[in-house]
Image 1 (cartoon, chains in turn yellow, orange):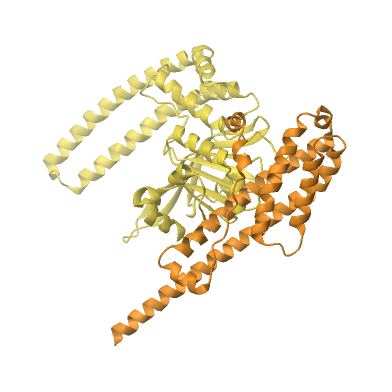
Image 2 (cartoon, each protein chain N blue to C red):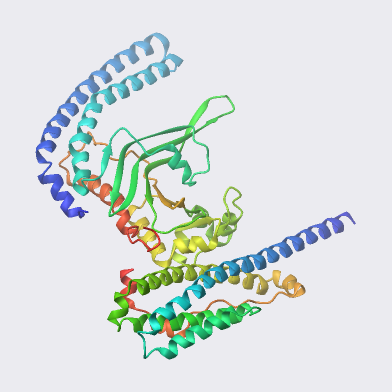
Length: 321
Length: 185
């Protein structure tokens, strides 16, 4: 397992030829985008002026034309950048994952199975659309793990019958083998109620959550402030969440600064980091050689794969061999 | 008259809810104590094995080993109260801790596969016991709070519910905290 600085070195030294090549590519795409973009704007203004003259400013057709232009622009943007994104994943992300551990497999188009996502029991809502990418599978220090970007959505209909899509979870989802045997489910969720309503009313609201099994109050006040824990077996929940485990999860939460969802089901730990965006996607308008940008790729990989060491999942108890 | 009846109904409902929540809390304590009991029994089952395998090596710790056996025998007696069991568990934990430390001085013991296996299983059970103790303490605290806080204390008094004892860490255990191990964990 390489450290962040080693990985940053790797990024700038080993990947430099590929970075340079991609960077020229990126600049070309940006100049194309600018050229087509300004052409599009000019055409749009001409069409709009013509329409204002013939139909008036607030004609319904105007909205249609505007939406049409936006749709064409986004399709054009995607088709122009998709090749670049593919190259970026093949030439930068793949070797970086290989550098972290050569036994890790990476597939940019695959994702963690919906079955595993649902098994985690972190999200009670039914899922109507499930997608993802950047799938990594392998084992770190003897601990089998897999993770990927996940986007889970559900659908609602409003009074006029229009369908609306809502994001249930978007971010990184990881599943790894846990180092202790357990039978019950233990679910750790971000503590929204206690943060917004205070411990008295918030705590009461949590305890009457009918969709969840019993609430488990733990003896770490700091942990309790950030998370709410539900589980079917209070003893097993504490067997998993020892004082040191709670501290490690808290430390991890502080570093990622996104909502953290953790569940222990079926002898596995499931971790969802709600980043709200697609990770490992190249930024078209920022230079690949930009330090901040590079650090984001390096840190995301390091944080995710480093979770095994951070939570000490590799410290096996004798009975789990 | 109607208002009076409604008030009476509401009052009865509140009383029933409080009564049920107290019963729920009391049963939760009993339920978790059964869990504690199960892991304690696991440990009791391992003790004779441990004592048998280490006694031939550990000449100087004969008295500690005898104590461990004695505590186990006491705790296994039928009809022992929960409080007595809690107290015995604390003593047993201290004695086992002492054996653990003393074992460091016997290289022969540390080379013995069988003893090391026992040691590791005891450590794992120790972790389960610690989890069970924490769960029990939380359940007892919930119950004790309900017994003492207004207005549930009124009904608890009428139901004749008694405060329960929590598992306390023994004084020697508190002193013997190994700071290095704590940070490395």
